[in-house]
Image 1 (cartoon, helix red, strand yellow):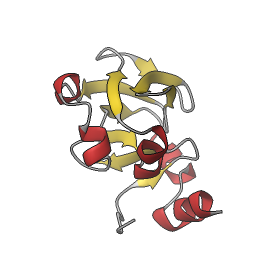
Image 2 (cartoon, rainbow, N blue to C red):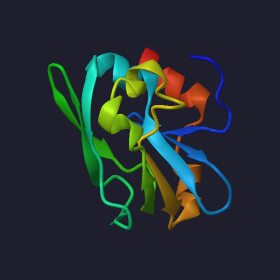
Image 3 (tube, rainbow, N blue to C red):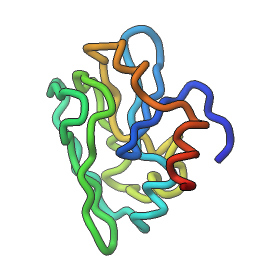
Image 4 (tube, rainbow, N blue to C red):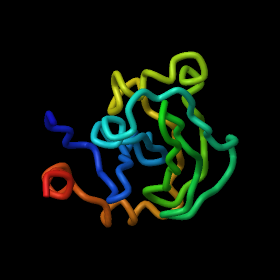
Length: 127
């Protein structure tokens, strides 16, 4: 995986990329999308919904399975990636970019410090 210094990763294979002091993007990792295979649908929460860290905030449906999505940090949903309605394959094609799932306002920004950097995450998925 190429270096993504600004990203933090959860053991549940989601990532967070802070976009400033008040918001961050959340998505699934390239490893997760590879394991799932072709993504056909993303069930994402309503704007304004609030979730705690490790709480299920939605699900991803692939050709052969459905997987819950776990919130990497506590936060309020500011936006969802509506492009996924017509182009769910963006998650497969660009998991760390255009395939983002939700934009959140972290309610406990210090939780970002509990997530893994890329090196630590890479060690988990290769062992």
